[in-house]
Length: 350
Image 1 (cartoon, rainbow, N blue to C red):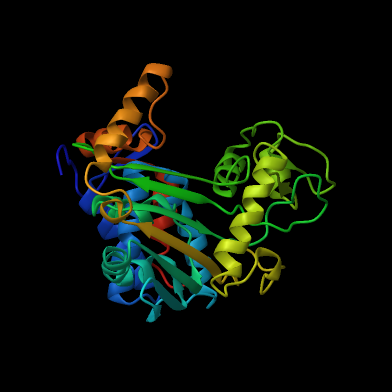
Image 2: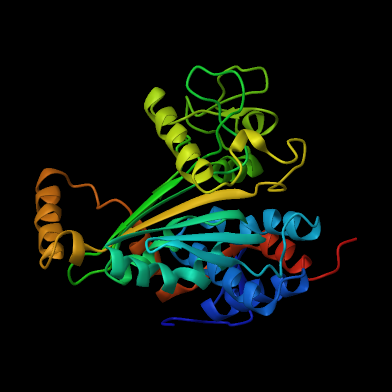
């Protein structure tokens, strides 16, 4: 990787510098030390690295707290062996063996691509799995293969519907990916909550405020206090009833169709972290060569040109490319306290 320095990690101004290789090696070592197989540890280490490289960093090393809670608490199977059934020519039904969804996706992605080429549109339906990382990394390889893709996943209950009084939805994120001509694919992902849970957790570490209309406290009162939102509060959907409707859809697409749990069916509502999530995730892949025929990326280019003429805002998801370029040149910088905590996970749980 260009610009890599100090593979062991140097520190400056409260930040520690890590090369890509060093960051991946640290994550891999931590997962191995906490009960993951070599294959699972390698896949999850890649997830951590991609988050630190492209963002959001809240799902990088900061999310190790949640990984460790699941692995050390026995809630997640770190040596899980996902299995797949070809339910029809265009449907791959996956059981994640109570492991991490990224492992199942990595293992059966070639099958999904093959099925999409054969049928024009294919679906991977995942149950009995946990997915902590952002969804963009689940889809970008599909777009790299020339496919258009959509995915959504259910989490533990953190969000109330518009006008609601109880947690019913997860943060229920969605993601989209599309190839484009002579450039990296378009890839974006977003929570259906006004602010993602991990963003609130990061803000709560320093007491940073969150935007209005993003959460209520444990008394149901609107709050911009990240700590109050984290302490028994509830997230709110983005754009009121519109975001609520999309989260409603995600629950049915990602949990209803796959046989995973709806958010409200949390296995252990009182447990912290990601215990008992058993998320459902649906991935839909489409082959433009079948649906559109030749010339799809030319049409994409026409649309992007019109988009650029109408706004000076970047293409959705392209912020990751600027972060990727910067990280490739400079490496990764971690808060030294966080790095110390992550290295502490190499030691047996007390």
